[in-house]
Image 1: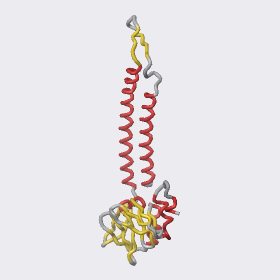
Image 2 (image 1 turned 45 degrees about the vertical axis):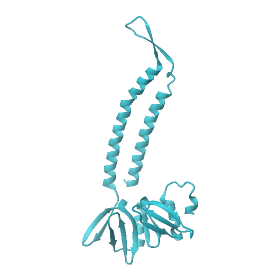
Image 3 (image 1 turned 180 degrees about the vertical axis):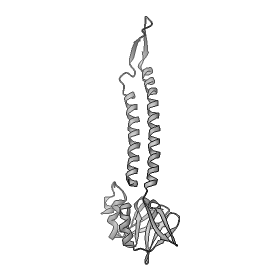
Image 4 (image 1 turned 30 degrees about the vertical axis):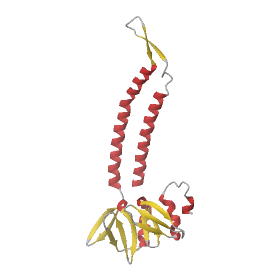
Length: 206
């Protein structure tokens, strides 16, 4: 299971819980009994007692709390399990460096930059040099959410925080940590992959 699929499952779980809670509150608030008068006959006594439906609905609202609390507990448990699974199945990259084989989470790599016959993995903590061509590593990283923005730069789409269009038709990206990279016009079309929904910004990727 991919990390993206797990995130989708977590989002669906949250949405289901919110809908259940909203539906329960809507049912209680939309009850036609609220504000009306209810006549209840007690079998052990010989008289009819009048009470307001507001009291009845208030009791009904309180009766929903255990159900909502139980759903919240189940949701929390499911989300924790999904987080464990996500960490276990998070995509990683393995490479040789200084006589050792290192394994890094791809989510922690902000960008990949060409440096001669090497590529520099721009990790959150330290950059790592790997003896491989940028074209080769670009193909390997493409299924994991990396796009090419320059002939010598690939970025992790989940790390991009801002896009600054330039008068030249190029753009500048800022990733987590503040580092900026230039997007040339040749690779501008790849910016479409930065988000699933663009609102009023279609021309940016045209």
